[in-house]
Image: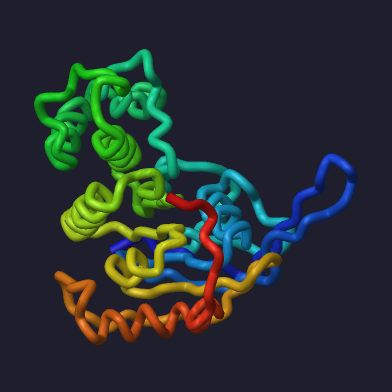
Length: 259
């Protein structure tokens, strides 16, 4: 099995327009086993997405190295698929053409054409191949985005809060779809999320990160069988433990909005 990620002493900073330096990652070390599912969780703006983009080769670290199967990551590559928080489908292309876009860009569409149909069926979009993004639901758009990331057969799938914009019911259904794909494809998955329940439900490990500049506070092994019940007492123990590490448990947090 392939798809092991090694992150060694990674530090990353950004320069603001006013010249001040913002340190996003501070000496991050992490090994992600091939075929595992891990979630990165931490305070908003702590650097989770920065770390994910570094693994993707989109933002190279200032210090340290990232390896995929002992090969140094120096640029983006098709062996690392990326699914964003928003589906980001091309509105002028059909579902089928959106999913096939990367294969066409790499010049391998003809030999991989059957894969497009396979992944359309895998994510439950059969019958909607010719539909355009505005003609289908948000959940279906997100399914198409996942299929687009998967069709290139990546070793690692990077998920940057891909379910954050969905309603609770659709989100839970999509969590099950992601688990199904992970089991069938036997790939490594790394997900950024703010949802503790989602992290416990999906993951083999939950990596809790500190406020910016981010480093790893603790790695929690989720020793629960699958399928998992969100109401199970052991599930709730993991949830409480992670919240305590995040220092949210037992506090009255003012909501960001009111209904």
